[in-house]
Length: 482
Image (tube, rainbow, N blue to C red; front, side, top):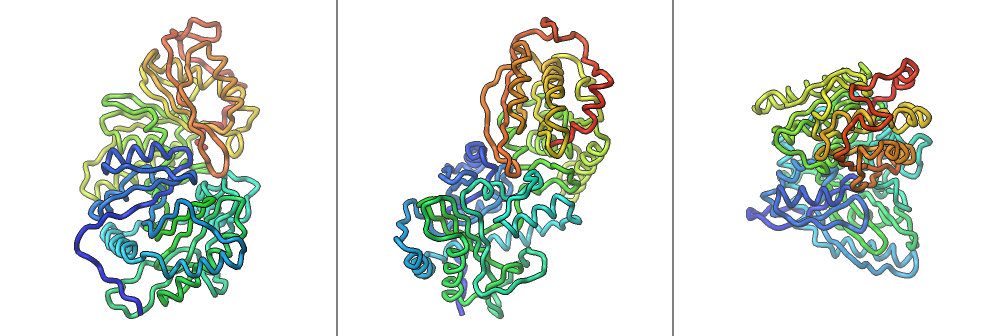
């Protein structure tokens, strides 16, 4: 039986992380800022790698930009695949015996001890969107007719080959697909249980993800004498293939870190990691007033208030249910911080309001960050043609001329671009970050408020805009975050 021996001295290891696609550079900036490590962006979108010493492992779990973590066993920048499928599969079998597993498994065990100290957060009863995520993870070969239901595995949806989770010689299991708590191997009473997860991108391979995971997993099982188990595994071995780039790793997270703050989900809850990335694009400063006029479940203001506590956040929505969800999420965070001995209170207020008639003075806001309705699960594309110009104009009224900024997420790019052209020079587009949101190609539009004074064009008013009754009816459900 294979025995794991831990070393007492800190060692340098390579950590890999999945991040929201499009925010790789933002995540790399956070790694540099908080860990002092230089991260490199993978050719495969949505992944970064950085080297740390093991004493900083717990700090990695506190980074806000990262979804899932793994320790790299071996990385091949230009892996030479054999010509035939049979030769490639034999190569996978041989590879398992040649890899330097020891250091990575030491990090895996250290990571387990960190997780035990932190305590595993109890999940609430799964919402409908949670159930959709579980289905997508189990059935990666199927793209749903409504891809906005997917809140996980955005990276997998954009590659040419689907992700495969394969444990060799495993029969179907009807239990929920989730790992068990890792075993304590000090006693060496039972072999570890494991599975191999393979994701592949590229169209020049003569094998599938299932082929690679099955044969590589069989070799891992034979080498370590571990027991294969797709659902209640202790170790998840990752085999990531992007064209000729091959990375073998061991997972360090059981569930994505983007679920860290939200307990009350809406129909289209924004990932916490994506919300954090949008905030970093605007670089909040001390005393900034930051507004999310369509807050949904409050993911953006929650991330902001926890990270930038010297700024002040105001969030609102015209839907009472959305406001209630945001309030409940804030209460959950306050309870968690109080239990952990942290100071209570957040620089954050939640308001129910009309997003086209904000109860705020003109030129009083430094930053506006929001997730606009895509017009699919919430609202409609037709309603967006009326909603977007009204929103942008009201945002321009409350935002400080010359210095104000905005980061607005939408998948309805055509409508947004047209609305921006109707603003009479109130907004200037700085750049766009293209992201994958539940399988949808969306953009985060970073804008700057120009020096143009609100009210000088025929479409502006010096007082807050009041929507007509017809407009209010159209805006009925449009303010939930997407």
